[in-house]
Every structure is written in C-alpha cells, then in structure tokens.
Length: 163
Image (cartoon, rainbow, N blue to C red; front, side, top):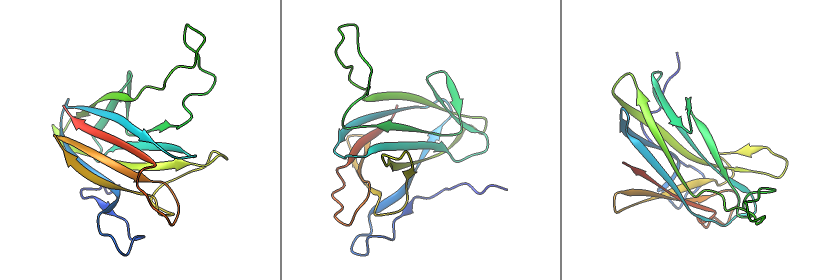
C-alpha cells in the first residue's frame, strides 16, 4: 500500500537552518483552483516545480489533462525555438491555473522544486536543493535553491495561491 505524505519534509542538509523545505504539503477542497506564478528565475539550470496529490483518489486537472502529478519546467533563457506571429521569441507563460479534484471531497497536495542538468537528468531533495516558504497576502511564496554549498534561495521564486 502506498503511504501518502501528510506533513512537510524539511531538509537535513542545512545544519544552521531549520526552515528549508524539501516538500511542502497544502490542504485543498474538491474543485479548488491553484494559481502558480513564476516570479524569478536566476539559474543556469532549468528549474522545475512538482505538484502531486497525496491521496489515491486525488487528481490535478491542468490544461485538459487529469493527472496524479507533474513537473512544470522553466528556464532563465526562456523557450527555445518558439516564435510568435511577429517572428520574435515568445515569453514563456509565467502564470498557471490548475484544479484539485478528489472523490474524498478534500485532500492534500505536495509541492517541491527540482532542477535539470544539461544532460537532461533532474534532481530534487538533494545536493542543497530546497525551498524557504514565505506566507504573504494569502499567497505561499517559495524561494528555491537548486544545487551547491552557497545557497542563495533565489534560483527559482514562485507563488502558490489557493483560489
């Protein structure tokens, strides 16, 4: 039987800090909307956010897809080889809406950051990756670090708002 996460997971890689999350857990009601907004990207690596329901009967509905979880990937260089009608590169979307669905009526979703190396392999919950959570104006703002001893927690900054 799969055991689902009910509490946040804190990193043990920062002995001088006790506020670095590997995974956050958020309570949601059935049909509740989640708005994810990318605020900053400051890394040479692609940055990812994963959102996954923590219930066998929970799903995320995103762009006509109903799934048990997924990653959204972002780059500070923006999209490659995509052009708009003007022939100029398009800006990657910075705001995403998704809906939580559950036959149980309410549940939890896990949120964590990841990074992808140039060889295509991606990593999370290791190598000094993690998030610092700031709660402000009804939003959860995540300041993320990807890899390395000199953690600045500015490699990816995104917010989650429950609507």
